[in-house]
Length: 256
Image (cartoon, rainbow, N blue to C red; front, side, top):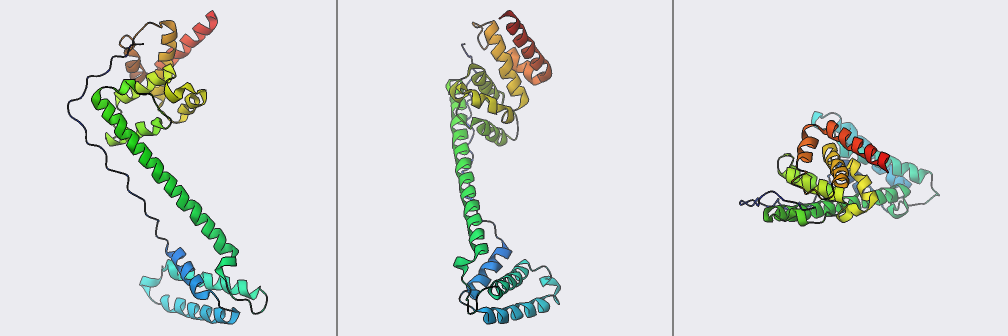
């Protein structure tokens, strides 16, 4: 179908700033545990017991000061000395503490590595979304968005463009996605990708695409200009548009 598009904009919107690298969140309790483990490395049970006595004495002193009453790091250090002391008490005589063979430590390190990998993956995805949003924004300014094939993940890019616009729903982007979805263009050629849009795109956009699909089957020679009313209908009365699409589907099935 021939697709007339909104006129080219004359004022170019500034591109969004680059995605900043997220910093690892500060965790006082984790810092406290790490400090204790470094100190405890190579200690035997008696040395750890002495350190535990000192930690308990410090905790009693801190309890007298209101500004130290909620010392998360101090509580974590005391708990870690207690845990290591119990670990050595249950071990063979003359055992010294070694974080490298401490199961709890290794599990924590594995969890931290997984969390860091997840943060890195999230950063890469955010950068990809931002770059694709820049690309689509530039294509809009050039008036060639309608010629662009949608890609996997463009649903999140739509959300990014909407966020940049102050959460104003941009009709040209939604119209582009609706027509691409109805025509099975780009990654929407995959039925699984089309099915996944149910949880990724707003209901009115999906209703618009469903209505376009049925009308294209009913009038395959109709161009987008003739079908422009479908976007208005899907926006103003999405339930009615959905009912119309369902009615056309049933009518077509009854004829086949």
